[in-house]
Length: 211
Ligand code: SF4
Image (cartoon, rainbow, N blue to C red; front, side):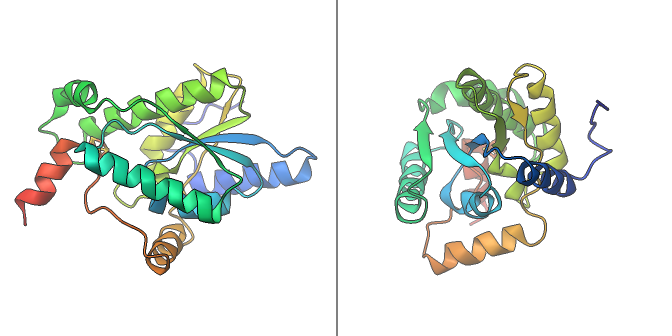
């Protein structure tokens, strides 16, 4: 198989091709999806209706702890009301250790090396779970975000897939074809809580220093 690199594929087209292949087969695959918050999960859950989806919530990046629980509780309420078929797995929350790790790049701007490390840490843990529990696919909702480069996220996912060969990485670009707009519209209609900063203490401080 031709090795995919950052530059030579379109995440949205790849996702459509994969779904088309699945529709032509008789199998309904399992997919483990890393989710960071409820609003970001809305459109990906619609898009992935051909899969049996399990959500893996690993987001020790989120500061402060009240915010972590608020995002998690919003996700639980959304799933209960709109996707009771989706199973939710929640990993341990340890913001102190996590912040120590990413503090190496604390002065980097958003989308810089701190963020790349942060995507990789969370995707690695969730992908490990998917692999250990024999899921057919793994993906992350983070490609829905306009603040995140889908090519970087997909590059990380493809690199991790060589470590977890039995679980295929589902390449995505959920923000495309107005995915981001549709998700935001539904979140507004549902009156869902939507945070105004990405998650870590550095993004929190940055957001609140400009108020
Ligand atoms: S800004 Fe967001 S992606 Fe970047 S390090 Fe902070 S929490 Fe992680």
